[in-house]
Structures are given as C-alpha cells and as structure tokens.
Length: 115
Length: 113
Image (cartoon, rainbow over the protein chains, first blue to last red):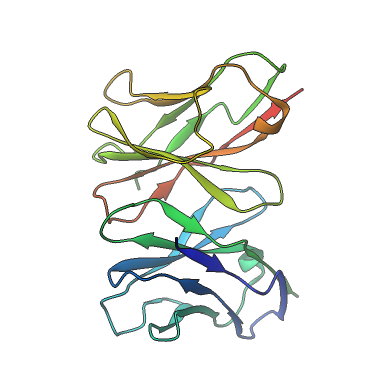
C-alpha cells in the first residue's frame, strides 16, 4: 500500500523568505502523480502544484516549485518570497496512475508566515 | 472559473439521525469523490463514483454511507444513522478524467451531538 509522510508538523518563515516543505512517499508503482494542496484557515482544499512521475522536469507555479527526486521518493515544495497569505496547512498527496485513483494524503505541515 | 460547490457549509445533527450532504461538481467532470477530515487529522478517501456506480470505496465507507447522483448536476453523500465519530469536514471533489487533477469543494462541517 502507498503511504505519504510529512515529517514536519509545523514550519515558520519570515515574510519574503524561502521555505521548503518535505514529503516522502512509498510505492512500488512507476506511474503516479503527486500533488501539494493548501488548506487555509477556511479549510478549503486548494491545489498548489501537480507533478507527473514520468516527467523529469520539476513542476513550477509562480512562487511555488517542487524538487521531485523519483529514486529517493521525495517530493518537496519550495515557496519563494513567502507571503502572509501563504499561512496554511500544506498537504502532500499521492495518486496511483494505473489502478486506484484516490488521493492518499500525508498528515500535513502547518506553515506560519511571520510579518 | 468553474468550481465545486457544497451545501450546507455546516450541519449539526443528533446522533442516529440521517444527513445528506450535497455537492455540485464542475459541470464537465465525470469522476466524483468524497473525502473526510476529522479535526486535526489527515484527509481520508471515502468513495469514488463514475458512470452512476461506485468505483472504489474505503473501509470507512460502510453500510451507513451511500452516494447518489440524483440528477445531472448534484452528487450526494448520505449517512443513514450518524454517530459521534462521523463529526468531520466532508469534502467533495471532481475531475474530468481518472488521472486529472481533483478539484475540491469548500467542504461541509458535520457536527454530530
């Protein structure tokens, strides 16, 4: 069974600085997708970024980028130029690309951006 | 931009009562999901639905739960006889394809007293 591990329960960063959130996963599949979702205090789940495992290039969305290390099964999220609005819970998620299409979530990292 | 909507935003019910949580997925999406998040815990998959059938369900999704797409727009989750431990945030999600990104609704907070 696939598992997703986020080892940092809480992180803190100064506004305008860069922070990296860690995520590791365990799977025997070769075709899969990885996601970072953001959950602000409103508790809405918002997609931040998506990575296809077959793509070697790391995904980027504006200030958000990932470091996808397939061999190490690592998928970290880098937030550049942190803004107060980035304060939220961040969940890493895994999706099997061939059979079960459910999202498997990590336990989350609570990020606080300090002014 | 199209979005998933959910009603109600907050539902309070007595233990043993039936509740129906409603979702309107993005209009051209064909795959629908329910997830739940107990306060302070991770988001957990409940069920996926496609072509008017359940595609997959978790062990949480027992006989007390059911899903339905009663018309062309709504997707509902029914809990027949609620328990205290059903208190959670329930998220609906939809996607256009099996491996497409799942877009989440704002959630329904269910409180069982």
